[in-house]
Each structure stands twice: as structure tokens, then as C-alpha cells.
Length: 448
Image (tube, rainbow, N blue to C red):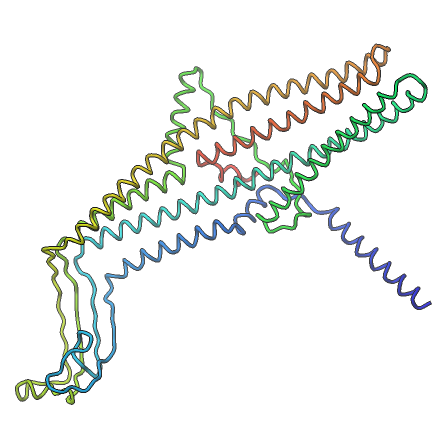
């Protein structure tokens, strides 16, 4: 009896847990695209790495700027002297000493600071490009998940219709109206729908898992809401072909200005040329501020080697150190190294600008082509639906049979799948074009 009560309690507990789980999954609200992007930007490792590089560049800039603040070093050089007190590590032996040094006039350092400031901007551009990469990944995965979810709903409806058709064909075969081969055809139609459902379900699960890794949400709670995807911007159309070409040329030129990759390459080239100037001006004269204080001990024999009464334990020196580099072949070699790096960076910037311009043109042409293909697919699907309506009308008058309707429905399903695929391909190309023109983030995170 006791075991029966425990089993009953256990069963009730399992049922309660299942009910809670069902209620949590049933009433989970779809994740909007904006919320998914915000979560992905918080969890993306690539953005964190780029942010760390940006912090490193900023710290390097502060290091150079702080060079103008005198560096104070305190210490002691304690030791016993036998004879004249020789220096310890370049300083006289002392009980306590303080050194201060900083550049006052150093034209090379000024150029190196400018170059490092440019590298900070380069790091910021790379961080922006990484953000765009994450946003593009989320948007495309989200849009594709919405496509598969929509297809799953339509396929399940088609599956119910095909099963009804299969049952109707079986009845016709039993009555002797149709042959056995018609049953195989009906079962084939059901199997094809089941295959497509398996494909759509598997693809949706993979995309949910990918979005889970991007956003940190559990895969079971991710449900795409197609209404949360902003409408794609409509490209401006001119009144003539020449005007359209002019607008596209302006768009390509603007891409070179707005693309973070191009901006990073251009700024890096500028930084390299500033380093060339820094290396060249390191051959110019420079002036450093220097100061030193030392408290000398009597057991180092200072009083034996200086005139009587001239020795004092407390000593200080304040002044400037002037450097006049007359011959420095190593520095000349560093100048040539910097010139080669600057030339390389300039060529890389030109290549990045040309690549961005070509990619923008390719995406513009691809959008035009895919939009036309989408329009064709839409018309073909509309015709297929009209064909279904026409066959249903003919069936009422005896001019068509169940097999004609099944074939028309199959064709309409194929046309719908093709339309969904080409529509998603158009969205993919449009998103890539938005990223190329620097408008992706503002489009994806716009307030609806």
C-alpha cells in the first residue's frame, strides 16, 4: 500500500512538471530581431576581442602622451668604497637618490603620438566592422529561421491535404475506379511532403542552435517573428539609365567612405606615413629635461678626494640634456623600413577601396537580378494558385478529377517553395549590400 501511494505521488509530480514545462513553452513569446541582435552584440566573442585591441591601442597612446610627464625614480646605491668612489650602475653610490627625466623637444615623438592616435581609430573601425559581422549573421539566421517556420506551417497543411487525397484514392481503388499505381502516386506525394517537413524541421533546429550560441538564449525559446524584421530600403530610381548609373557610381564612392574595412585600411596607411615622419625626425636634435638628487655617505671616501670643506652630503642637479645625432646609420635603416611599410599600407588601402567598390557594384546588380527572379516566382505561384481554382471549378462540372487537383496542388507547392527560396536569397543580398554601404546597423536596430 505504501509503495502504491509513493508511485501515485511520483506520477503526480511528473505530470505537474510536464504541465509546467508545457505551459512555459506554449506561452513563450517570439524573440524579436532587435532583441536577438542586442543579445548577440553583448555575447559576441569577436566584439570583445576587438574591444580589447581598441583598449590596447588607447593604452599605447596614453603611454606616449605620458612621456612628457617627468618620470621619477627613487632608490639607493649603497656600497663600501676602497679608493675613489666609482659609480654603481651609472650613478654615484649614495644613501638615497631621486632621478627625474622627460622629453621637452622631441619632434619624432610628436609624430609617433599622431601615428598611435591614428591606430586607435583603426581599432575602432575594426570593432565597428565586427559589430556589422555579428548583426549580419543574426539577421540572416533570423530571416532564414522565419522562412523555415513559415514553410513548416504550410507543409503541415499540405500534409493533411495529401493524406485526405491518399484516403480518397484508396477508396477509388477499392471501388475499381483507379488502378493500384494511383495509390503509389498518392503515397509518394505524402512521402515527399514528409521529406520536406523533415528538411524544414532539421534546418530550423540548426538555426535555433546557431542563434542560441549567438544570443545566449536556450534553443527551445527562440521563435522568429517575421513582423519584427524591418522593411528593406527601396533603392532610388532615376528617370533614365544614365541617371541610374550616376547614382550607382555615387553609391560606390560613398561605400569607400562608409565601409569600416576601407576606413581602417586608409587610416592604417596614414598611421604608417606618420611613423615614417617620426623615424625621420628622430634624426633631428632633441632636448630632455633631467634632474637628480643624491644623499652621499662619508664612508665612500668622498671627503678624501675633494678639497677640505667642499664636500656636502646633499647634492642636486637640474638641467636639460641636448642630443645632436650626427651619425646614426641604424636610424636611417629604420626610416627605410618605415617607408616600405607605409608604401605597403597605401597599396593595401587602394586594394581595399577597389574591392569594396567592386563588391558594391556586384551586390547592386545581384539585387536587381534577384528581385526580377522574385517577381517571376511570384507570378508563377499566382498562376499555380489560379490553376487550382480552375481545376476545382472543372471538378464541379465533371471536367477534371482528383488526380488533376493533386497535380495542381503539387505544382503550387513547388512554386511556393521556389518563391520562398528566391525571396530569402534577395534578402541575403540586400543585407550584404546594406553592410557594404555602412547602413546595416541603422537599418537593423531602427525603432519600429
